[in-house]
Image (cartoon, rainbow, N blue to C red; front, side, top):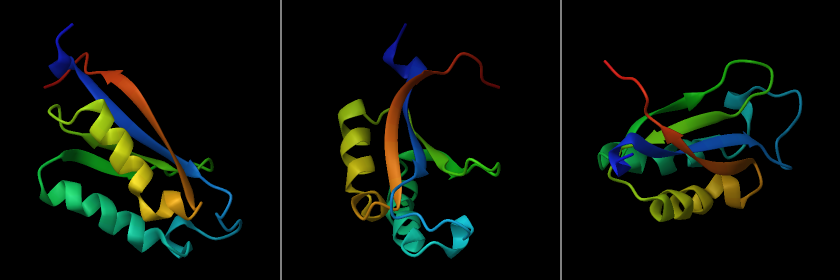
Length: 100
């Protein structure tokens, strides 16, 4: 398996500072999270990202193939919303098995 077939995907789940009863868009600090990942989008390091729409909440970010696991881990943990406890970030390896 080549390294280009593996991406290190960031999954976000609500953290201890998440305010129950508020939508994701009403959470204090969410704008800082979006601004943090917008840096990667503008730098060409993120292919896609967004929230899950089911009751579990959270979301995911899909970095481009050239971003290392160490860089993904560091960036995910540097997210102001993760540092503030609004979100928890988990990085998981994902194999791109099919694509158009």
